[in-house]
Image 1 (spheres, rainbow, N blue to C red):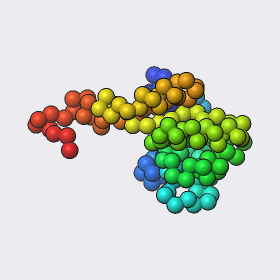
Image 2: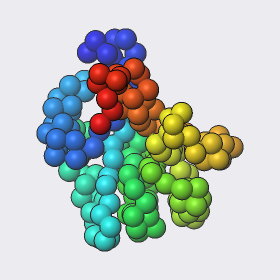
Image 3: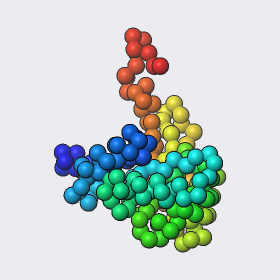
Length: 173
C-alpha cells in the first residue's frame, strides 16, 4: 500500500518466482488496486509444448486474482513462432494487453513484429540484460526507439557489482 501511495505501480512477476507462491502472495496485495501495472513472464521450454503458454497464463492469472496481464513476456525465444501463435488469441480477446519478448536478438524482435503484424497486432516491449559492463544493446535500443517498442533493461547494477556492494573484503562471487 505504501509503495502504491508513493506512485510505484509497475510490478513484475513470474510463475517460477517461488513456484507460484509469490504470485499468490502478490495477488493478495494488489487486490483492490486496479491502477497497478502487472507484467508477467512465461518461460518456454526448449521443446515446444502445445498449450503451455495458455496454461501458464491462466494459472498465473488465477493465482494473481486477475483476468488479464498488462504486459506478458515470452521470456526466452524458444519456439518463438509457436508461442506467439498461442499468445495472439489472448491478445485479441484483451487478456494480454501488451506482449513482450525477453533475452532476444534483433532478428528475434523483427520476427516477433512480423508475426504479430500479420494478426493486426504490435510488439509492446523488449527486455534484455544491459549495464555499463554489458552494453551491447545499443542497436536494439535504437531499433526499439525507432519502432515505438518499450525497452526494459534488467540487471543494470549487475546484482550489486556496480552499486558498491562488492569490495576487496567482500569480493564478487
